[in-house]
Structure formats: structure tokens, C-alpha cells
Length: 259
Image 1 (cartoon, helix red, strand yellow):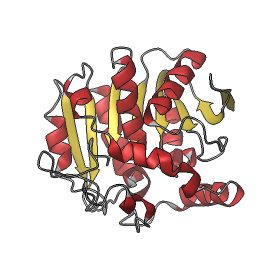
Image 2: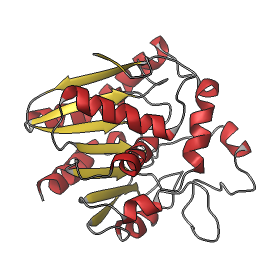
Image 3: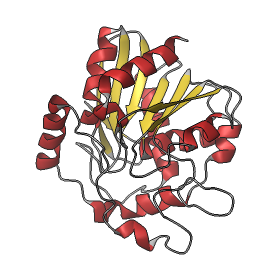
């Protein structure tokens, strides 16, 4: 399905099922197909499942426009409005989680039911105020380090069906990392801790025990920032937790949603 934003960029999304809406957002460079195991599981559990490809990713339009986190937030808000989603649950992996925090910074979380952030620190740059940055990214290496290959994101293989779907999209619509670099720089520059501290709705922070990108201890720290924070560390999972340990992840997410 296609959605045209207010700045005339065409985004691709899927929308299946009926019931409580859940909107899934993938990380930098990833397509919505990474959520295949969640889409099938939660549709079967009587949820309405929406998966969005943000601009420049998956099947969405490639553009130089709006490559900043505030525009990602506006895109989410416009899609929620266009689909008439009432009290959606927002679930984001990596930069997808940061997109949710960007949304909360502009629109608050009062119109949301719950929020789930997967293996994403609210601050990518480590300094004297924060020990849980992205790999060894510091102010001295920012933004130059972001041009380098990040290395393997996973600890174990993602499930075969999801992998085939993701691979097909990559082959048909290759991700242009250079084109999207301004978004990555803007993403890494942000600090969302104040946004999380002002949250009003329940939120869950999930970390991969074996994440090559983040120290999983950040999850507990972030869970303590807001009024109703929770955390889970998924064993034997890297950065793409939901596709590496899909069965366990789905149960953790379902338990949090129903709590």
C-alpha cells in the first residue's frame, strides 16, 4: 500500500488484521519485511498490524527531502492520522525506536497506548553523562565514524522466511546508504533522555544480550527514566532481536501488551 506525505514523498506500508493497532518501524537501512514473524503472529492474535517503510528504505521513495528525525516523526503522525489509528502501540527497532522518541518529542505519547524500543540507546554518542553509546562512538569520532561499515548486526541467523523476504526487497530496491547518510548523522546526534523522562504511557525497552552495537545494560537504565518503564534482555540475540529470536520476542511483546 502507498501513502503520500505532506511533502509529497511516497511511503510504502502494509496493513493487515483487525483489533488493537500495532505500528512496526524498522531500523536504519532495513525494510518492513524484517517484521514478518511479528506480522503473522500478531495478526493471528487479533491485532491490526501496520508495517511502515520510512523514506529511502524498503519499497518507499528515495529522496533527498526530509532526512531528519523530526520529519520521520511527522511521517508517523500523518500515517496514524490517515489510517485513523486509535491509541496505537508503536514498536521500533534501532533507529525505528528513535523515530518513536522523535514522535513523542513533537506530539507526546498521550495518544499512544504503549511504546516498545528494541536495542536502541536514547543517546548514540558516549560522553561523561552517558556510558551506553553506539559501539565506540564519541564526540571526537562523530560524525566521521558513521561513514564506516558497522559490521555484522546479528548474533545468530534470522529466520529463513524473513531472510528470504528481506533479501528480495534488497535486490529489487537496494538501500542507498550514501543518500541516507544525513539522516544517520541526525539520528546519532540526538539525545532522547528528556523525552523518555516525560513519558506518560507504559514503555518496554528490549535489548539483545549479544548485541554488537549496544551494551544491553542500557535497557534497565532507560526503563528507570520514565514513570512506567520496563525492560527485557533477550538471550542469544544480537541487534535484530525480533528476527533472531522471533518466538521468544513475540511472547515478551505479547505479555507486555496484555499486562
